Length: 373
Ligand SMILES: [Ca+2]
Image (tube, rainbow, N blue to C red):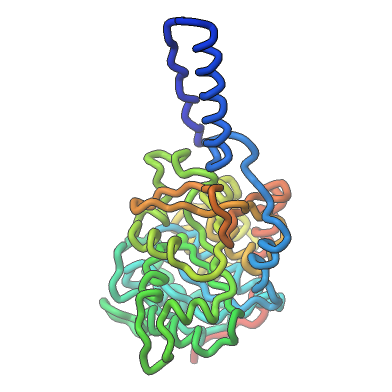
């Protein structure tokens, strides 16, 4: 458990007069009220302020069914990325999502092939996959090698770039979609999205990356940060936001369409994956990844909650009335001094209910399984 820091000590002064003391108390009280109005204190007052009706309409305007999803993932350091991709396929099998592409934000050599293994297992072997060619985070993994080499996939082997450049794939995918239609779910580093924003017009599109995002992306759902304040975490560091902090800062401050954040605190105690070992076959690559990562237990569901919200939207509260203020070091804080088209998520139902729902998606057999010739 993470505990918020103790309330700061109130300094004591010699009593000059009751009037001075009363005035001081009044000033301190007013200052505290102003501070509380501008930003939520750690562990403090009502943490979730629902967005008003116009903001809610903006934040959910891209929630069409089935949701066209681009999945941006580090797919190496932790296993919840594999679970998130698995439930995205399960939701696609239920007719609730369309998977446009998978983009890898880590430099892990086998991540692209491992992701293609999961896509192939679920009968979608031709989903476009891109990977950053200039990774900030190399990212070792206990499972990508096994998923890449022991299962069917058709991403070419190699020790350098094994898949197209993520920025190129992003530009191709977005240029081909209707305006204001795409939901991007980012569950890793914001490296690719920063590089997309920085991309110039090219043969794919006459629009810059920033213009493409503004035109095509309805919503960006990000697993990253801690809400209402990352100072609740050790050193204020949430992994996804801290590992490529300049990219985090660039994306969260410059992204041109609505953003919804799923924070560390939402997924940490929603533990899923143990059902894979008993209720799915040994040749399920998702089960193998969880086994290799956890040794046979469950794992927190940070990335799964982001996908689940992006596709279904049910079971989560939107908390708005402000914006996500990110520092250049990746620390974040919900700031109520201005309202932007942004929100963070909290659970609207008991977390055990979300756990059961996510586990059911994880063990759902592929609707159509395909193997390579
Ligand atoms: Ca991740």
